[in-house]
Image (cartoon, rainbow, N blue to C red; front, side, top):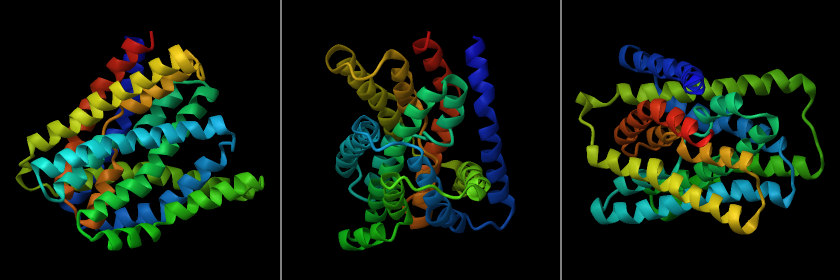
Length: 306
């Protein structure tokens, strides 16, 4: 039980940011869409660049982001197709992203720091890169596609700074370039702003839900993807590696498990808010999954990390 309460106390402060965001959104005239744009277009590219430049260019390194990216895309595709059958409108787009993308950053990184040594934590960070790439490509496209045509969505995707941050990071890695040490505090502050503003934006989104008339069917489907299909898919990959491929060891599997069990990503609220594609449904799904994750994640960790 000690590890359960240690994890619980580690993630509780994140919920304080959500509460502050809710209060700010309810009682202050705060432009949530403007904050979302600030995160997507200014803060996120620095965070992505910093994370990637601390990895390596080896093939085994880039398998991990690829695995995470493909898993996210696979689950998003399934729920997008199913959503089109039952909804037939832009709700299918946002169902796809809330089912597929986990809060591996704001929620998962503090837990990974608590649980893992530096090497396994590095493995976890590499997995989050795949989710980040998915978020800044497929998620952005699907969200924009819920409101715009294919050509308009692709046009907006090409303007997304995170893509160019990824390219510049690969260039820096290839040529072994480094940022000046004087920028360390700047980058660290950007990472802190990413976590604080991202969690607050969940609160902003929740505060705008009128009468809290949640779409329970939508939320149930999002839970099916995020808390059932995602972990099952990851466990299948772990078993395949354990019995056939033998690439990773059991300690690294723990990082994989954490990637799969975190709640719905807070950034789905950002994209839905900025592009005005059912932000109230996304916010409510994120709210319920974040509350659920407060108990679900520590229980799974205690059960699997014995």
